[in-house]
Length: 234
Image 1 (cartoon, helix red, strand yellow):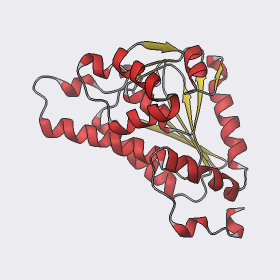
Image 2 (cartoon, rainbow, N blue to C red):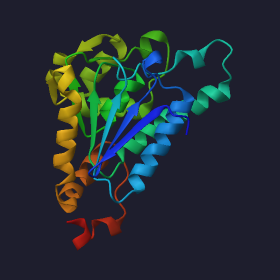
Image 3 (cartoon, rainbow, N blue to C red):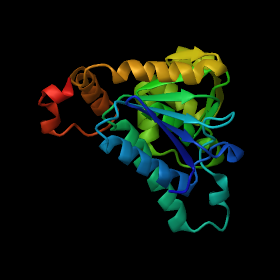
Image 4 (cartoon, rainbow, N blue to C red):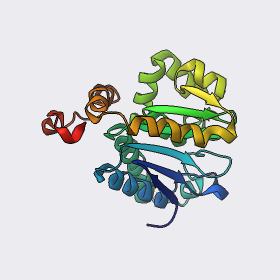
């Protein structure tokens, strides 16, 4: 791995922090690959009961790294990056443990998609949200658009995508894509406290909620074996 994701693990909770603060945690191909691999590792670890996704520095995620989209960008490289965005969002949507986006600052484009793909979203008073792709002539990944439609409804989603406006934290809570806004200095503590509560909840109870959430968000159903409760799932 390339060191673009900072991983912290404690008491059954793992935090993945996008760690490119100098580029506002923009989604480069290397960062996406590393995030994908970290998500796969976390999903496969039976000790982990909840996941937090956040960003280093003043931004959550600035979306696509436009340095990879210059006029001389190879088509195959652009397609690879687009597929990685879809794969990462799909992995988050289908993650079996509860996921929390701790949005510490601006979440733009695919960055907003990362937050939408999580089950829960806590935001700081410095958070903002924008989806400027259409206005700039870029394609919005279908999985991102589908999740936005699910969360805010088709009319509101069309307004957001076509308009490309920037939305405040107050807008996020009122619009339903964020659950709660807290002071910036308290965001990390609040996210870890919430994840800790979830990690101590019976797995069968969590799974009973996650299964329909996963399907509603466009994910695949759990394999049947995972729906057979055992003592280990308590």
